[in-house]
Structure formats: C-alpha cells, structure tokens
Length: 151
View 1 (cartoon, rainbow, N blue to C red):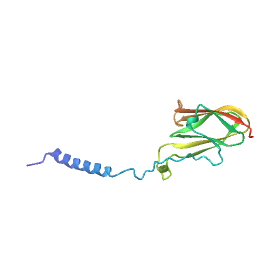
View 2 (view 1 turned 30 degrees about the horizontal axis):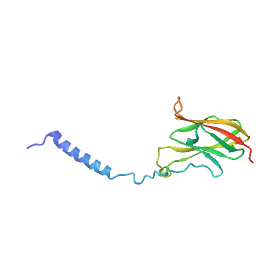
View 3 (view 1 turned 135 degrees about the horizontal axis):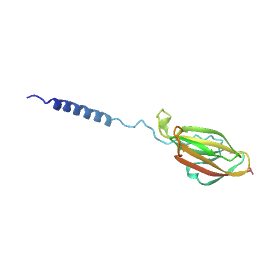
View 4 (view 1 turned 135 degrees about the vertical axis):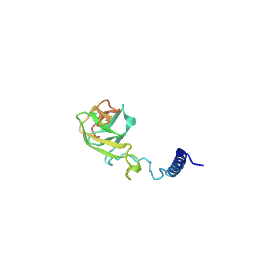
C-alpha cells in the first residue's frame, strides 16, 4: 500500500509541530525579573510628586529641590512652567529589574527635577507624547505649585 503524498508530509509536519510546541512549553519567563524599581530621584530632593498628584496643588519651599516622578513608554515633555521655577534636569531610569539586565521595551521612569527661585504660585504642565508622531498628547500632567520662602 502506498502512502498518499500529503498524508506522509502531514504526519511529519504534525510531529514537528508537536515537538516544537512541547519545546516551547518548557520555555518560561523564569529568568525575567519584573519586580518594580523606584524612581531614580536624587537623595537631595525633599518633595516628590507622582501621577496621583496630577490636578492638585502642591506646596514647596524656595531653594529646595522637588521632583515630578512619571513613567512612560514614550516621553513626558514640559508644556508650561512658571518663571520662578527652574528645571535643572530630567533623570531617566528603568521601572523593572529586568531592564537593568538588558531587557528592552516597557516603560521608563522620567523624573523632572525642579527648584523654586522665589515665592509664587503657578502651573507646571507636562504632556506625554510619541516624539516621532505629531498630534494629540497621550496623557497630561498638571500641578499647581505654591512656593513659599523657607522659615
């Protein structure tokens, strides 16, 4: 009895498929460390504001650094900042431990560092965007900053 042409090929392909599935089933992400990392905010920063503070008013002291800690797969850019607040830097860092070992993709911490140079009240507004695409912001962050002189 002769074997049909496709019957033999299908049997061999089916066996190869099952072997591949069985091999992949043994693969796991056991080496993937998805434990979260804290934002890379410098120790000199006293006041730290996260995503939950968006839309609120915050109190800071003139001359004392403060930070806005946000994570994103893209980029947070400043859209508005009062003149009495300087932004000396942005610190970037991984959000999970696997990124330290070279895992790619996922969100990154973006810590915007600020310091008030004089008393005042004003709005800091940040927008999250894909820098390579024009158009609407993906997300917005707004905080009203009230800066007072040190006591």
